[in-house]
Length: 251
Ligand code: PGA
Image (cartoon, rainbow, N blue to C red):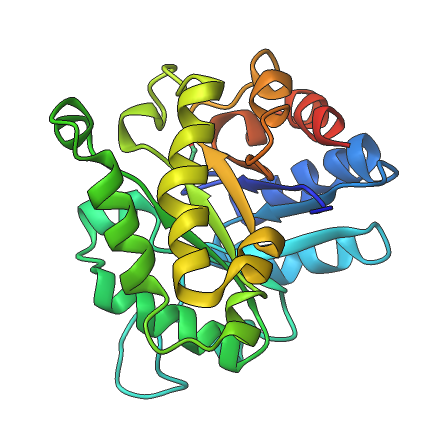
């Protein structure tokens, strides 16, 4: 039985002070919900302020990106050793980073390996564009992204990762994938690929989230699907009450 994981990706929202206030509201809202892993993912500059707010709450903390090198001449970047101790999770390869910041399958792989090396849980994002979706290329695109992300990663490490299937056409558009459609992509083009790489046991244990316009209204039916092990939530994670509904729908 896979424990569901709900992560709230705040993207480039909230000042450090606003982030602390939202974190406090979230501790009140979902701190006591059991049976579901809860993670919030504020901007880098808010991590140090939010971490003590979450202490003892059972809510995990994640970063939105990292660099694969431990340190060095990479102005503006943040490394896994810098995050370690501050947070436990890191989102890697979000489509907005692939689209606007030159993230590639290769950098996603390097970042995933860096996170694992330093004991951070990677939430690795994959998903097709609208054009690819309409051209019927979803399966090929998503399975290719999964294979690339996991290159040279051994099974024991693969088990520690979380994958987020986020069709780009569903992110921030209010047009979520259908529960059956998202479940089919996850089962046929992600879990099956993991089974091919690592065997049935790893595939049965690895958690795969859905993301893209998850709301308080549609979370329950998405999360009821057999292969959807949680959600990566953007917009609705900025409202404590809505995120609370989504978290409880997974519990
Ligand atoms: P959304 O974003 O829930 O606002 O669509 C999801 C994401 O980008 O992770």
